[in-house]
Length: 181
Ligand SMILES: CC(C)(COP(=O)(O)OP(=O)(O)OC[C@H]1O[C@@H](n2cnc3c(N)ncnc32)[C@H](O)[C@@H]1OP(=O)(O)O)[C@@H](O)C(=O)NCCC(=O)NCCS
Image 1: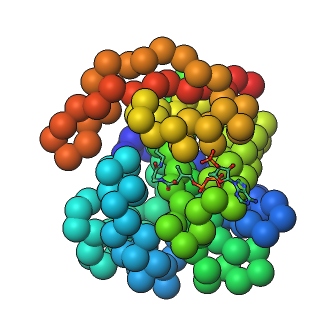
Image 2: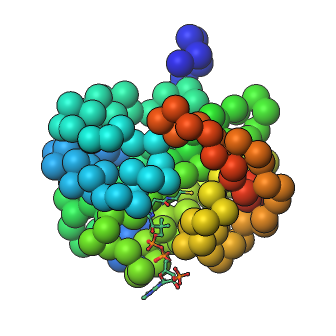
């Protein structure tokens, strides 16, 4: 955390579109997080700990938003206790007006446009309300589903970044996608 800098502000009013809403993570989400993060695809393509324990979930929730990160739960607009996925900004630099963005969808909510809608909502808000000028997301070449989500949300495919991410002690090539203001 950068000492002295305020946390990234929360979207006000909260972001929502159709059946989806974005909100802060809460203590009541521990069980949903543990169930969603036990999924092999989420474990493979994101940096969640394996195995993902209730303690991991509590630590993640307690950390909340910071000067460089804004993690949000994607929930049902009708029932905000129903977690459908996650979307978040990380490596935010308000001075450089850029951020990275990431997402996963709980296995029980896939194939319904959850990731695309959540990505579109947070991306537009980050560019318009937060004043960022550039958003980057990184997807492994074999993660075709994630790349289609990025492209449908308006992100443009960029370079292959060799050994661009480190997950659990191993480096992986990633394709960089970007969205500009
Ligand atoms: C990649 C991932 C985020 C996609 O999440 P999702 O919510 O299922 O994504 P979407 O529903 O927006 O799009 C997925 C598919 O559903 C289809 N879809 C979209 N809206 C739909 C709807 N209303 N009804 C049925 N299908 C729909 C899309 O066409 C898409 O199909 P495709 O995979 O053939 O392109 C999800 O598989 C996941 O969590 N993977 C593990 C973590 C991960 O890879 N995170 C990204 C790291 S870069």
